[in-house]
Amino acid sequence: MIYKVFYQEAKDSTPRREQTRALYLDIDAQTELEGRIIARQLVEEHTAYNIEFIELLSENHLEYEKTHADFSITEF
Image 1 (cartoon, rainbow, N blue to C red):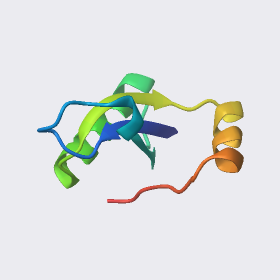
Image 2: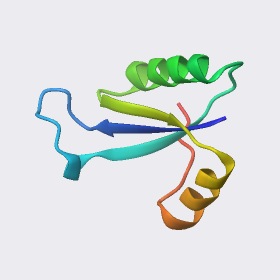
Image 3: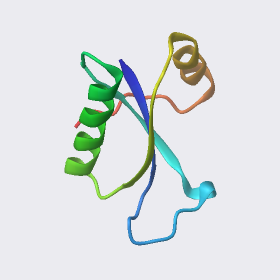
Image 4: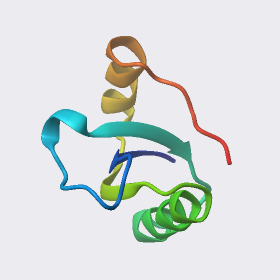
């Protein structure tokens, strides 16, 4: 399952929509909730990012992201 993680690069500054970034993770999980938990743990262990939201991408949404966004799977 591919998850899109929205984040701010610094935890110590006020979040601003214009500064929100995204990364994509391929998570092997049994449920959507388990995948969100694993994604959050991975990002928190390997970065100092302030996580705003984690979203499971549907097949259609994933295809859209591949063609319209700076899409690449992040590996830790």
